[in-house]
Amino acid sequence: MRLDEVGKVDSADILIIGGGIAGLVAANAAKDEAPDVDIIVVEKAHVPYGGQANKGAGNINYLAPGDDHEKWIEHHVKKIGIYLEDQDLLRAYTEENVPNLERFDSWGGGICRSEDGQIISLKWLPYLPSSMAAADIDMMNPLYRRAKKLGVRFINKVAMIDLLKDGDKVVGAIGFNVVDGTCHVIQAKATLITTGGQNWRVQPKYADLRGDGSAMAYRAGAEMRNCEFGSFHVMQFARSQEIVYGAEEAMYNAKGENITSRLEDKEPSDVDPWAFVLWYKEMLAGNGPIISKTDESYVFTVTIPRHLTEEVWKRPVTTRYWGRFIDKQQNAGIRYGGTQEIFPGFVGEHGPIRVDHDMMSSLAGLFGAGASSSSGSAWAGAVPTPPGRLRGGGFGVVFFTAMRGGPAAARYANNVSNATRADAEQADSLKKGFMAPLGRKRGVHPLELVKQIQNAIVPLGYCMYKSKERLEEALGMVLDVKAQIPSLRATDYHHLAACNEIRSMVHDAELFFRASLERKETRGWHIREDYPERNDAEFLKWIILKDSNGEMALSTERVPIERYTYKP
Image (tube, one colour):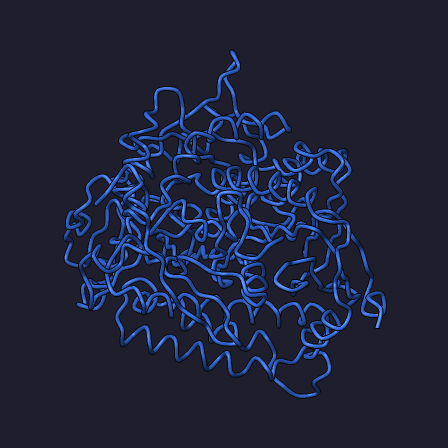
């Protein structure tokens, strides 16, 4: 069998899977490193409008002039990552933060500057040792135009499903067009996954991040790391179900008691995970509903108004975007602020592909950048990332990982023999596997399983305030959904893509719960009711999962704390 009998065949030096902000940054950085390198970017939506970057506020974590870099590293290790960071990588993030912003801006990123050309920075919270810069949220357009001018090729509306391997080396990927079903086979010397993390379709803003990249990497045999920290939360207004930043600063129960005052950390790094545990306990005790008096919140009354007006940052697209949001709320008769009931809103942020300092995975030829490997890189330690409890940290880690991963992939590709060989039999077998739901006359529609998997991953007692009993219960629910995967039925190519996304959601949920069961302690964003103390003696280590003959094999790796600056 020939490869062109399986599908439409393309070849490149570098295949980038995912055309969001990470993919565009990586493509531009790779072209700067090696102008002659041939790059294909494949996006299941449409470049430059996919991904997460254009759906927020454009804020960027920034170590401004006057910010103490060493103090920032110490703060991060002791209060955010809780000694589970790769401190060498964290230090590199710090050193490269400003050069990365400047480089991004030179590509047309549109960083907001003062009249004298200086980056304008603000504080999210006055006591944090880092600042925040900003860009307008149409930032992906100039990156796309620059990459295209440099010769990067783009393929839209194609969902890549599985990686192709030659022995233990990744040599490309296979997928299909979500409109017409055309199978695409792309051979590449280096493959870079920039598909974003896993958010389990809960928050509408971030519902397009469904873990496709980590799932295909796992199925190919790549190692996953820090899976137990993929449960980022924010507070939301109960009436509008909109995210409200700073609500946890002023929480009151039905008795009128200020429950925020019970939190031990009086100067948290952005969102404090214990605020959600406190909400959970109060509700179980019958002291709900929980309200927030946002007029008492510094973030809500000071930080947000400064960030979303043009008094400091001139950002017309961002201003229109948030203006429409606020108008929509007001027209619906919904107040935004004041005293309102709040509840925890699940986001996710699960990006577990393990990568080294060059963003290469445990498989030769496979790299990961952006959210898909942000947790797996271990730069941030015991916290979901991005944002890693750093508002604006999403862009910070995208610039850092993609500006490392893109050039590293280019160097790798330039050192690999021209004989990139994807096996036609392997490709055909993979194609038959992911196309199978189209051939079933009866079966489960993929959307029927979305709610089932959300029922396991979203409740606080399963994903935030954990115990062995509840984790095993949630894992059982996930495995029940997993057992239905072979019965998935698709009626068109969009539903076929959804079938793959369900596989990814189930895969990431199983990783999350198995790793959470293994970590028998409380550390950072991983909080165990049955193991309430941190246990450095037994768990100052990373939990690693990988596929072994169809089963999740679990191992651990000791954090090399002796070589790091900050120790418990």
